[in-house]
Image (cartoon, rainbow, N blue to C red; front, side, top):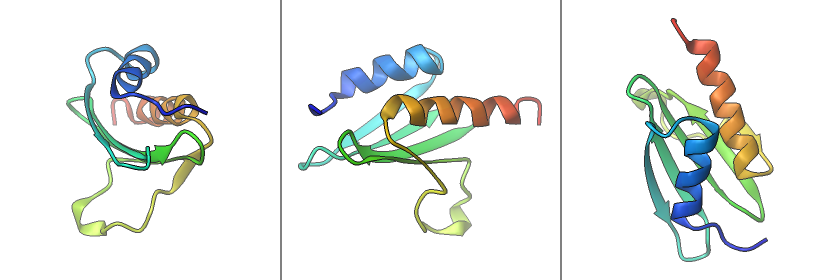
Length: 93
């Protein structure tokens, strides 16, 4: 699969989550990306590469340290859909 651009990530976030989500993208030389999403009430982080898949976490505490992501998905869209579903489950709570 071809590398994903920062703009493509932003478009997919707007389409799957909401165009009001703040997106910060860090791209690494090998094509991997780290993406932070801020909805204003929740924060999600996803890390990955289009060829190897994506790991993601929602509202991880700073005191938990980094031990990898508890959730994974084979594609960016699947990861964003998982984040969307997790955020929907936290609505109002």
